[in-house]
Length: 337
Ligand SMILES: [Fe+2]
Image (tube, rainbow, N blue to C red; front, side, top):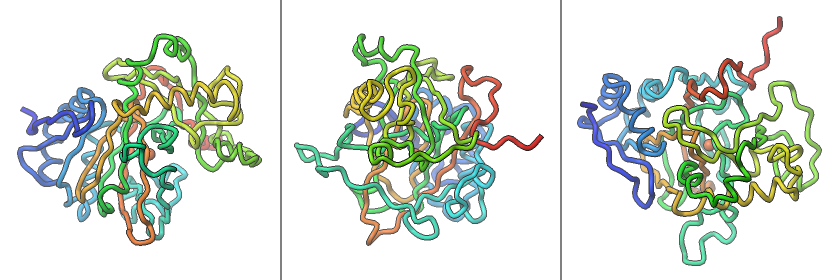
């Protein structure tokens, strides 16, 4: 007995699931998740790393429920007041909630629309490079985080402001053997935003700024073994979370026009093929739970001139896999001895 039903896959996708609890409402859902602590993590692993729980509106008035739900998925829920995060984006009373919004004080604008805005057959573009912004959360950290939860406080109009996911496990399994051989044993070089090392910054000729030790680019395997399922998954980002000065791929010619760029473009185009993708249309009260160890995602445009979007994010750490065993957190300055 887990107290819920798994409805899979998510509409229009080949992975993911909606979780329908016997007793609806955020307080009941969180109580049920806590009473069966293995059930939701097992469902997440079983369903390709993406779960949707609907009608969780009560979290907006009781944000601690989101933290309790997040704890179901791992031992550590990030406290954003201790991780060098812009404090204007941290929830006023719950420091484990990152507010993602175009409204003040966060003022985070939505991404631009793809060019052209629709595919040739009139659909939402999902495949790279027409769709850009693909990343896995905080891949510039070692160890990287496991899982993110995203709650729709105030979503925007349908067909805008979506979150799109691509499944690295399905994509890896479908890689042509020659491409599989080229990624075997290779690492990507990941770096945080605003360091002057993104692809667009390098192409523009920006001078990369000097980096403190805790900001340095980090290596991550291009093929990551999932610590729960054991399944290999493609693990890479594109413009803004790879290092385009010394990377994007360790050991290959660096820079936006090098061999590394060519391989990354080929992999990202494959990873975001429509059969590996799910596009989520947000409704108020939706909670999505995604596994950063095997999925990448990106956001879509909405009209920030007329709509205010408010979303809450939490990040769960704790089981990155044996590759990271014993490592201290790369992204935090070491305390003075
Ligand atoms: Fe993200």
